[in-house]
Image 1 (tube, rainbow, N blue to C red):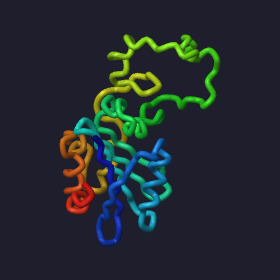
Image 2: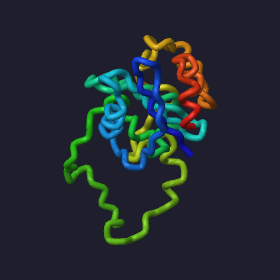
Image 3: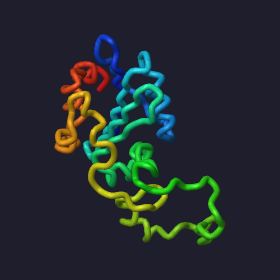
Image 4: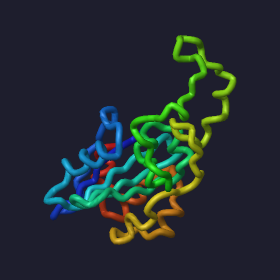
Length: 182
């Protein structure tokens, strides 16, 4: 189970709206969604949390690139919603080209309808992205994403995934509006 909400800063405080991520496939899609919720190109925060295992905060300020913080990259990598946030740039990797060269293709016969060997699937993907690349456990991203809003790096790192988004909203003065969409 996951929870996702948008918090848009306005002249009168924060406005919250819950959001479905079913149509969101990339960070760009998520950023566009946040910009649509923005009032006068002001700050929008996207909160995502999955089963108390991890949480993520994406901050969009006008047309600037989004800033991302994920509490546990390895846990997020096992989630389709977490993979939206775990970009190559965030993970410090070179971006993949859309066109794969023949040397990198895995031609194991499964393309002919043969079943894949499921014995290899047991624990190989723990802490790995859908591309099979290892992801570090623990926090990743911009640890100062909320500093100017009252949550410094030390406080952000100290949050556990149980009610981190509620605690962040409390500091922002947005706890009540966040609870209305929970």
